[in-house]
Length: 175
Image (tube, rainbow, N blue to C red; front, side, top):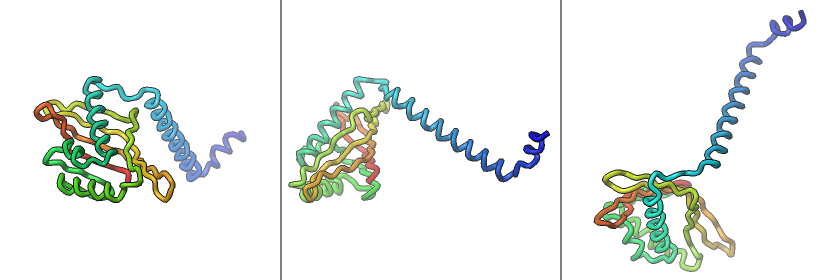
C-alpha cells in the first residue's frame, strides 16, 4: 500500500529530470566506451605501403620546415595549392610561401619545429588522384626562455603527379 502511494505522488517534473539524468549518464558512458574502444583499436591502414609513403613525404616536408629551408619546402607544394588555416584563412601558394618566410624570419632563434604525433597519422587512398592524410602535430619553439607547444590537427591532400607527391590542399586546425 505504501509503495502504491509513493508511485502516485511522483512529480512529473522529477520523473522528467530523472530520465534526462539517466539519458545523459548513458550518453557519456557510450562516449567513454567508444573512446576506450578506439584507443584499443588504433587506425589500421588499408594500404600499409601507402601509409609509409605518405609518412615519408610528411617527414621530408617538415624536415624542410624544421630547417627553415624555404626553397626545399616549396618543392612539396603544387602550383594550385590551397592552404586553409582556422587562424589565418585561406591562402594560395604564393601567399603561403610568403607566410612561411615571415614565420621563419620571426623565429630564427626560437628553435621553431614541428613534430608529428606518429600514432595519429591516418592515410586514405584517393583512387586516380593520390591520398589524404590527417593527424595531429605539435609546433614547438622557445619564447622568453620557456618552451611553448601548440597542438593542432591537420589534413593534407597529396596528389601523385609524374611520380612526385605534391600537397595540393592543406587544412590546419586548432590555432
